[in-house]
Image (tube, rainbow, N blue to C red; front, side, top):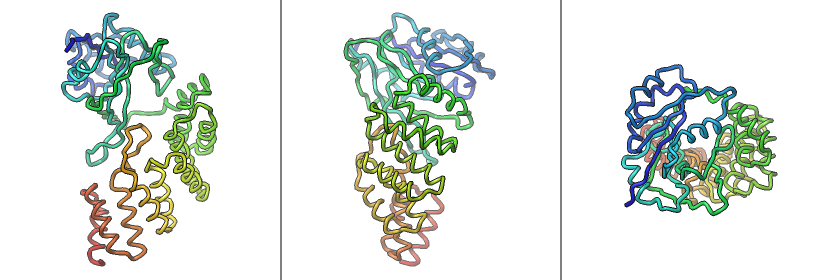
Length: 362
């Protein structure tokens, strides 16, 4: 197995809680490069006291944009580096991550795709899991977009990419950190490239997060009209988010139509079936709940893209199904599915109480 020069690079701001653990986790690299973008906590002191293979610089941005900071941090990396690993301070690789990379990297490899756990459920199990690609050759890429930045390949020849499901990276987000800068950066991103379908979708989603429902609906509809918006999974997500916005505006029929459009767009994804079933549950249309949940449960392929959501694969569908059967007085069915829900969420007190009630009535 050939030994490559592997360098980790990252941007940092106020990461004193994570920095020591991160530095320990990435010590398998030959060198570690960190660009601090304006920390006011003890991050700089931690970096000063780090091991000799850690190189750091500081730079403040006005205005800040992620692609510029990422590119500046990449430019810090040694020119003779073989493999660049972009890893954020709140992320952790599995042990022996370097060996996995070196075992699979070849002379013509340009990019690695690997398994990324974006969040965790309250019980500690994995939430949203998908593949990301932030490990790359030194001189063939640059970062683009002010936020939700991605690597852009710079060469004409094909970009040889290897997918490594055995290489795992885990994200431990600080939920207290503000996302307030994301919306203006996404608006800037769409302004700079109005034909970019990915960021149009992200902007619509961000408007939804900010409860700007009319802006969200309009932007998501714009995403769906773009010629480049061909990925069925993301199109289905736009329809689902439109449905959520319509639901928030009490436009129940429009919400149902949007969820149905999402199902038609990507019938192989569970999410829209379950969101439609939940809406029907709220409207006491229990036979509809049963139909759509049972359709969702026929889908067994759990795709690993950022579109997938934890509620589609945790206790939620069985929970809804048990409640729907309870309200149409099919107590044995209700008990069957509440037991399945409890298997997936054994510490959920509400589901535990439901099981007790159903057992008394069955």
